[in-house]
Amino acid sequence: MKQVDRQKARKRTLLLMKKNWLLYVFLIPAVVYIAVFSYAPMYGLQIAFKNFSISKGILGSPWVGFKWFTTFFETPRFWRILKNTLGISVYSLAVGFPIPIILALIVNGVKNTKWKKFAQTITYMPHFISAVVLVGMMSVFFSPRSGFINTILSWFGASGEIYFMGNADYFPHMYVWSGVWQGAGWGSIIYIAALSGVDQTLHEAAMIDGANKLKRVLHVDLPAIMPTMVIMLIMNFGSLMSVGYEKIYLMQNSLNTTTSEVISTYVYKMGLQQQQYSYSAAIGLFNNVISFTLLVIVNKIAGKLSDSSLW
Image (cartoon, rainbow, N blue to C red; front, side, top):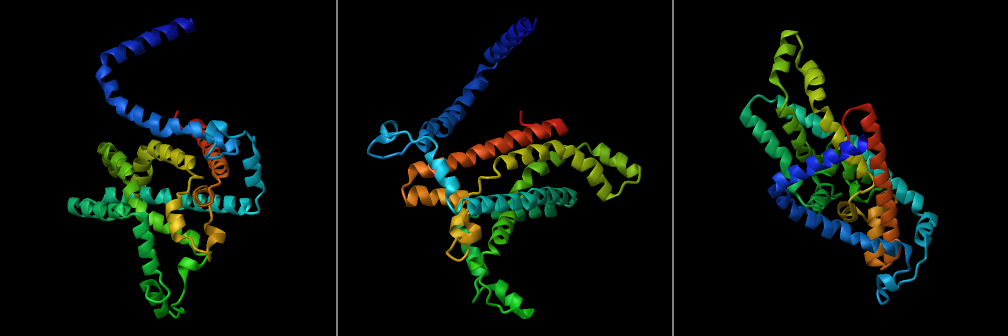
């Protein structure tokens, strides 16, 4: 019986594909792009299990099994690097996930159309600032001699010569909060779009029942965007270990490496600066396996606790 149902479902799918063939034609560029730039490079992952040599190539290099993984796990810096990666990632998630939602709720509550558009434009703009420019701005703003942050602190009795960029204790906070400032407006777009689809009759009914603005947000707006929030949370967990190296590498210096060295910067240094290709590939593969495992686990938990999941 199940086999018959599967055959019927397969026939219906083929008929729909034949009927809407033009839509599948439009998918071809995206499929080709993903195949070339996402799946084809996976062939090179085997160098993580080899002693790769450029002269011998991927196929000619000898197999060494899990040697490079063991080397990474046994390095004295392993736990510190892992701790820094998880610490910055969890910190970024804890702060960066709810703020776009709060911002979207605030913007959605603005009734004046002009002020609403102005607020959206102002909060979107930092997203288009490159990592290089952003770190340059931070270096100027937090300069111990000419930065306005130190100038303001001196008004309140501080020394006014704090080297924020060279202090290991300040690094996670500067990285995370600058990222929140840069990405909160852009991250709120999807939530604003979801809030625009909320049935206004629900708000009207809540107002008739005496619900104030806060109660309407809690009992109307938030439940309406909850599926979107769950999907975004799952996707954020999937990239929990993937702390981008560009911004961290630009902010990094010899004074703050105890808290700024993460897996992505370590891979960059080992692979491109020291030409240890197999070693860096093994570390990158380890990082991706952890990320994929977290994605599957969180997706499964979300599917059990709610009706929203990626698959």
